Image 1 (cartoon, rainbow, N blue to C red):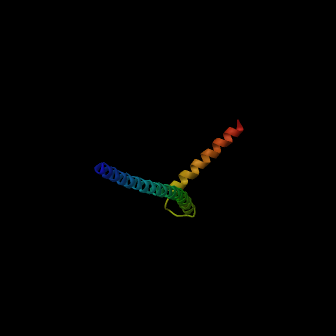
Image 2: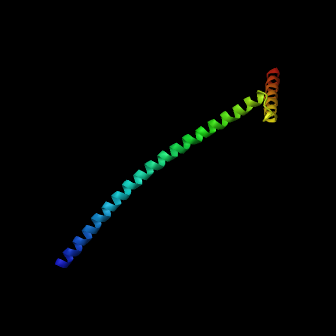
Image 3: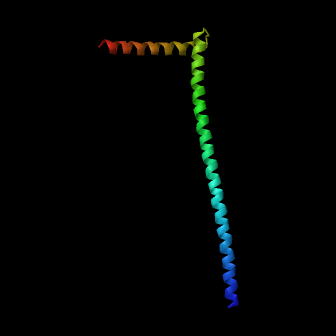
Length: 96
């Protein structure tokens, strides 16, 4: 019977160690999940900042063209022509 008791004790010890490992892994998983969520939030925030900076860059590029810069003059003319067409379309819709 003492052999069976030793086997049971050994099994109990192994089960306790496995339970501790499981708890540690669950805790580690929770920490990694929290870190992943924080990283996702940072990425989303940075993506929004990038989009805002792109819009600001386009605005500055157009303003620079309107101030007489030879760079991007074609783009500015195209944008102005597009805006004029949109205004003409709106006027035509209002006339009907």
